[in-house]
Structure formats: structure tokens, C-alpha cells
Length: 503
Image (tube, rainbow, N blue to C red):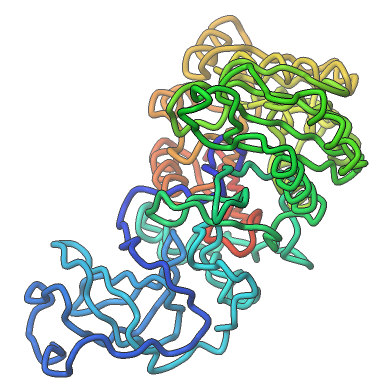
């Protein structure tokens, strides 16, 4: 659910069956040409194990996979086809033939889904940020509901998830991302800002990305043009000693405050033409209230380094969720889709069913946003987080909003929970919002020993969610509600809030 669980664009892979990821074609519904002679078709072979790379097969697509690929079956073996949609009949060329699954690519769409549309983005299927732009939004919501159902069927043994509510989607499933962090590079002597392509080290220009807020796109483009006009390096240059080049730009827009924050990630603390750069950026982008420089000299996939310097303006920008106010420093976590975040937090509140008398533990609390949201409805809320900076931000947020019945603790829930229970603190409700890897086994053991009446699980990975729910059900809990939420339209990611009640 939260930002650290993502890479650049919410494309993290989950464990389990993995589809092939070698397709960079757009999937707008046009029929690719047949790539191999008909003599290599294998429809009459008896076993899927006899397939070879390059063979052609016919597959009926049953559902979307966890990464947005179409999933069908050939001789009872799962087939993953990037770009295929549920309900379609696909003539496909085998690209992988493993013992437990088949990877294939589209040769021809023999039966087309009524939900297939032309993707509006010119780099869809290339940049890797979105996986299902070629699917109508109605089809996306249906596909994501099925992803959740399939996960509980496969990993929790629940064949009919009767407790699941209809997914909460968006009226306008575009322009929703309030933040972009884009790599900089050169293309034909022009600076470009973008993402690295699928399974590639090639930078793809994503100017005008349709899922980012227009103000974010505008600021990225204007920053790129200012850097170009001042001839500030954005890549390693041996003649300059590899110093002073800008690696990444990070732009954040406040939906409520209408303030803009710009962070330049540099290879060293030497920023060429710094004063002139600040002046030109301020002239080009009137909404700017904060310009910072983050220093990351290491050759790493991590965007940020440990050192951040304010070079102009305010320390952070203001933003709000409901009646909560936040001040966001350059590296502070904040939800990427504020409109859907309100629906998510309200779903948590409904599941928690607080009356004002309950004690609540907010595990994996991050910067404390869920705990702060619930505080007016509870007697006491305790948040637990292992990252020092997040705990400090949570405490600042509590003070800023006057939430005096909330406290935050640095540590691990599996350690603190038993200690609190031993000292007489027994929570009525536990909220957990873990990373994509799910709940730590020792944390689930601690929950089962603590025995809260209600356990509310917020998840961004249906597979690990279902696996963990199975453990909790075996420990004496039953599922009373599953609420899917579409936090990231046009991508395959789906969030869910699950209420488990102690039997």
C-alpha cells in the first residue's frame, strides 16, 4: 500500500508463478503477424511437456495474472501471455517451457475481448510503468477482483470468497499520481526524464505520463528544459571527473495545498551553477515552494542517498488527507493516490468498528497515517515501526494534528506486542499494513498469542495476503470482510482490506 513497497512505478513482482517478461510490444488489439510456419503447431501433441521454444499453441485466457499478464491453460499447465486479456482466444508462440508453467507471446488474437481498447499512452508496453492500459476500466476492476479471488482460492483454500465486497474504483482513473521520481539521461543531445524499459537498461522518455498529475508532468518538463538550457550534466562525464551530475529528479504535488516540491538527486554535493539554476527554476515553475538536493554517490538501484540539503524555500510542503494535515519533507512517505487513500482508510475504520473505548495497535505503521486517522474513534492508539525516520515523522504528524491519544514506538511488533501484553496492555484491535512480502511469521505468532478481537489486514499483495490469512484462520480467526481497492489504475496492482474476527 505504501510507497516503499514500490519500485519506480508499482511494478514489483510477486512470488509464485512468474510469467515471461520479454515482451516490449504495445497491445492495442492489432493482430501481430504469424512468426513461425504452420508445420510447427503442436495442437495434437499429447502432453504439454513436449512443447519446445517456438512452438505455436492456442490458448483461451481465463483471468489476469498478478503482473497483468493473461493466464490460460494448455494441457492443464498454466500459460502466461503478456498483453492477452480474459476471454480472449490467443494463438501464441512458446517462449518458455518450464516444468510448472509455459511462457508465450501473442502471434494472433483469434477471439478479441470486448474490453480490449487502444492504450492512450505512446510508450505503453515499453516503459513498464503500466500493464493494463489496453483494458477498459470496467475490465480492469473485474480483473482485479478476480486476482483477489484467485489468490484466496489458491493460497487459502477458499473457493467462494463470499465475504468480498465490490472493488472501490475511481471516477477518473487518470492523473492520480502526486509524485514522480524519474531518471535523467541523454537522447540525441536532448535531456530526457523517464523510466528504464521492461527488462532493459534503456531509458524511456515518459513526458506527459497520463497517470501522473498534470502539474507533476509540467514540472518535470520545465525542470528538464532548465537543465538543458544551462548545460548542467545529467550523466557521468569523464572530463568533469564524474562530479556534479544530476541523476534523478523527484517532483511532488500537493493535491490540496497546490504546492510543488522538487528534489534533485546528485552524484556529489557539488551542484554546477546552483544559484542560477534555482533562479531559473523559480521563474519557470511558479508553484515551487521547496527545492532540495539529495546526494547519492553510490552505484545503486536506490534513488535516494542519506544526505539531503535544502537549497531554496521551505523544508517541506503542506498536504492533507481528510482533516489530517501533514508537512512533507523530500524523503517523507505520503500516499501516491490521495483520492483513493481516503477510501482505503475509511475501509480500515469501518472494519475496525471502533466505539471510542478500544485500544488499537497500528503495526508496520510507517509515518502513522492509519493510526492518526483512527485516533478520534479509539481510546488509545500505539504505532510500531522499525524505521527511525518514519517514527520521527509519525510523532511530528501526531503533534501537528493534536492527536494526543496516539504514541509511536520504534521496534518490531513481534517483540513489542508480547512485552506490552505481559505488562497488562492487551489491544482490542490490531491493524497491520506490511510490505509486499507480507507479515513476518513471528509477528503472526505474536498476534495469535495476543488474541485481539479484531485484526485488520491492509495488503498490496493478494498472494501473501491470502497465505497469511490462512495462518490466522488456522489460529482461530475467521474472515468477515474483504474490501478490494484500486489504488493504481492502469497497473495490475490491487489493494485489499481484510477484517478477521476471533472465533
